[in-house]
Length: 168
Image (cartoon, rainbow, N blue to C red; front, side, top):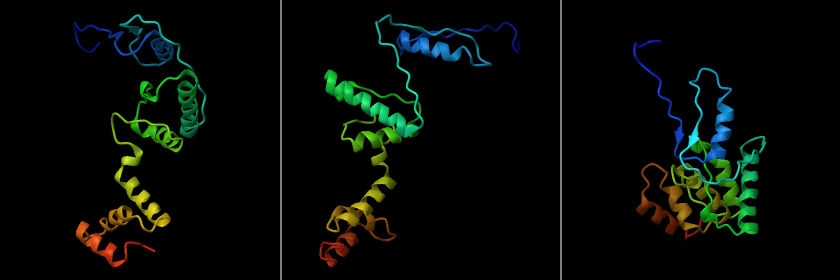
């Protein structure tokens, strides 16, 4: 209605997802107001497993359900962890998943963004906690000392030696 002669071109062909995923997306989108109606169709016509719906209360519950599913696939069906993928819309939502998988010794890697345990402030807190538990942890001591203004690696090492290689 704004521009004379314009026309709507609907981008309905989806190159990423298979039919069962798109069926769910189409079902959800049909009730969205103020959108251009369209029906997503898969580019590939491969057989695929239907998606499952899980009702969870929060991110922790979601991570627990995911952990149980991943563990079941690995232990009962023999699927290697390296052949599984967890997709999420926003990186911040992955923190509970990362914590749960780490706590349960399930190997994973983040392919975009920085993992929760790779964030600098998390490494700093972990260094502090590690030093509380193990006062002989030189790496933790050095990391914390280098957070102080004017203290570099050389000074931190001098302090460590002066303390007798222990912080207790």
